[in-house]
Length: 89
Image (cartoon, rainbow, N blue to C red; front, side):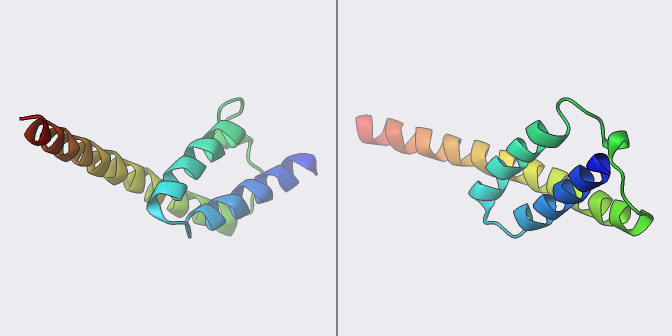
């Protein structure tokens, strides 16, 4: 039962994280990963089929979000670097 409760908690937390703004969402996803996947495996989750489908959808949606967030952050750093160079001259 404890495994089931932890799995449902992980799913609910991922649903909540999905509603956050970009910066908070990225940080929360890293923490979610550390809390639920660092010491265990996705195969350890005890969910019903429909819950697993929801988890799968959110999981891949957030992987794509993190890829885009990483690229956006990289471009922002480049832009800030250019502004810094401009202001120094």
